[in-house]
Length: 295
Image (cartoon, rainbow, N blue to C red):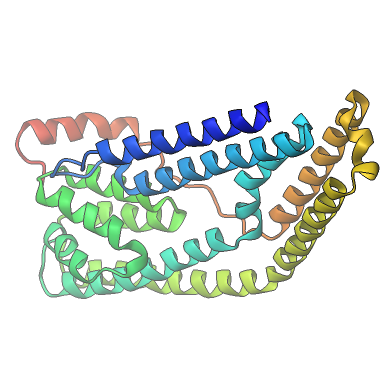
């Protein structure tokens, strides 16, 4: 009963902390968005998931009095949703598809004698949903007279994909140019992106079987765990020190196996090449900003 009272008090305290945090949260100031603004919502969801995982671990500890089981439950709630979901692969494919559509529209705008910065700002009005937030942030930076190179590099960081790096590198090269040459470069990039999207969709379909197998294994492990918790005579040895060690080894082996199956179902992506600005670009950029020629 003492442990249950402590658990109840912890839940109440956690709820009060979340309530105060929500009531006192301030809206971001207007102006140029920070690079972390687009991931703030994801961070909030991650914090909520961590809180729920800790609560679930405490509940398991109160029921079984097995510290290893409580730790495994907490870690399982944090990582199993990621292991069983193909959302990451689908999101990356959707981003590539959105980039392909956006680059085609941008090429059409540049062919109509628009400047690059003007075309980028206008493109935010009809950006595909998958990259709408990133393109809008890029347009707001340019509208705030941020250096074009800096704004494009921030856009590449927010896209966080080698395809975004290729687009930004091409835009940096053609900065200040107009006409068919620019349109040709962007059209070629759009064709390459279309092929990448098609390839990733085919690979994802072929690896869906691994994700299905992973879900079945996780379901079996959860069902067996519930059976062990309900059958106290079967699970009694796990309450000893030696039983906890054995339970920890079993949980570690299951975790390694599940992670291996997860890795088999993923599509490896090549590394980015614009993750760090070149050293030679820093000085000209500072001179450009200081001389008022940022754009």
